[in-house]
Image 1: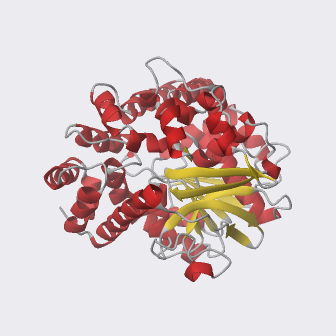
Image 2: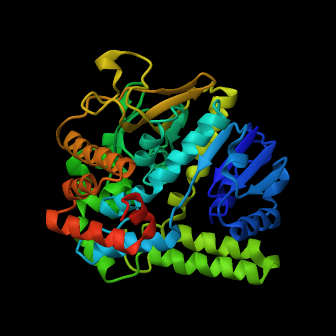
Length: 453
């Protein structure tokens, strides 16, 4: 089996390679690392060797040719970052300077990221379509739902993966002492915008028990970030990224007066690559220290100063576990009928109920996150329960903006881009939306290129 990593010089490559160890049912003949930065490719190949991760993989290849990387591949894992971490800093700061949320996947900073990602993502989809038509693309490139939806316009076998929703479900099951194989759960939403709405065993829903337990609920990271009282008021468990919607005022204030995540990563990962180049023999050890710090500080703006993310929240397997389980199911079948949460097409349901749409109120081309089973015949989304009320309102509003983002990027249309930013529920002024769009175009040539500016 051949697996291609897009963004193969990126910092998190060892995380992905780590799942192909002894005991894995997925055996690789070749792992291809593709990146436009040859120096970073060399650094990450060195790290893989020093960490002993290359031993379980038949062959590791590095290349700066996209065509060579995808030709004949079986799976593509896409984690590209156009403009690098420096582009993320621009996304965040231009928003924050105007009193708006600056976050990589939520709101206008995420849309700025999407504008420059979409053209390259389309190039990848076209290359796989032409050179590896039987392959699956596992998209982890943010904002994942938007990028996946755009790519599927030219290549249908693209699925969005994210570890956040299934990680939340697994932690909830663990707290309640439930076995994953026994639980039938209902989760629905978009990428980084969804809710766990039930968690049943033999027809008995255990989610209300968790929400009502004064000892267990506060142990959920979502409750620490969003608040136990609000979660109980909702009656469901929200994805932790809904923190940015439910506490937008507080998080913007906090980020305006501190270091953004992008600024942290520029500083931290810049130091890693410089250190690994200066002392190649210590690259593996340096990577491990840097990775531990990165994990501990994830979503630090949602915690008290100095408070680290609990190990239990980091140790749910991450996106690499999701990718491995997906490849395992597609390659070897899934006899246990294990459920995943994946970003799939709204028309991907096996049945034709409600016109075949998983969420009937959304467009046919929408990418939605729902529980799925996976086997050698493909990915089989499970139809969620009806989406109503405030959940439906937020999903439909954000999805409408995402559709505008895609159309704007593909057409190079600034007016559509302005509409996408201005209509987002976390933006309170059309004038500010126009101003920040012009700022993004002026500060980042990769965005200016999209709009011929």
